[in-house]
Image (cartoon, rainbow, N blue to C red; front, side):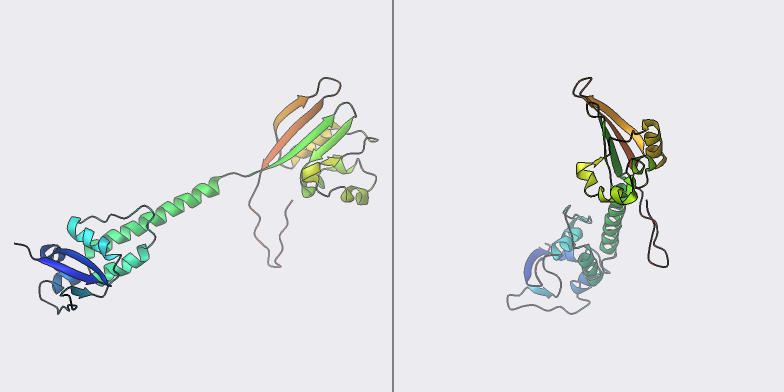
Length: 232
């Protein structure tokens, strides 16, 4: 009849059999419970093992089934690897190593998936037909690179003063100077934007026409030796 063994592992009590503990003869446990190395007992007669108490359940389950089974949210693989080295169960060491490699592979795949997500920048052009009013929503950096927009203002100082919060409220172009729509759209597309959609609302005479342009947001360029980089 197989002998029942009680273990005190880091203060936690486990019950198993001698045959389970000696399943891998070349391991520390195999040597300990085959009499090849000295063992120590506590006052209750439990064999004392100076290991991690909670993690030993994974060691014991592996001894019983020869399969490493871990919870999906297991976060202590490094500590478990240290325990595997302590018990010197080569098959268990290999299983923990494979589990770690799988976690690394999953994280790398997730990283690549995140990197593959394309971010877009938007530019919206509105024309209020009733008032002949042009309004452009974009960043101040983009608007400063559209000559057709800058040309509608009397001077550059006046233009730059109007660039505050243009993403929220838009840049209202002066009505006393006509806007060449063809040039405007050509200059927008030359910055890498493409027409995404158009819409019109409010009726024929009081309608507001909208054109929405998008472009892919590119990663920032590498920083130069002087510590600066140039972006549009």
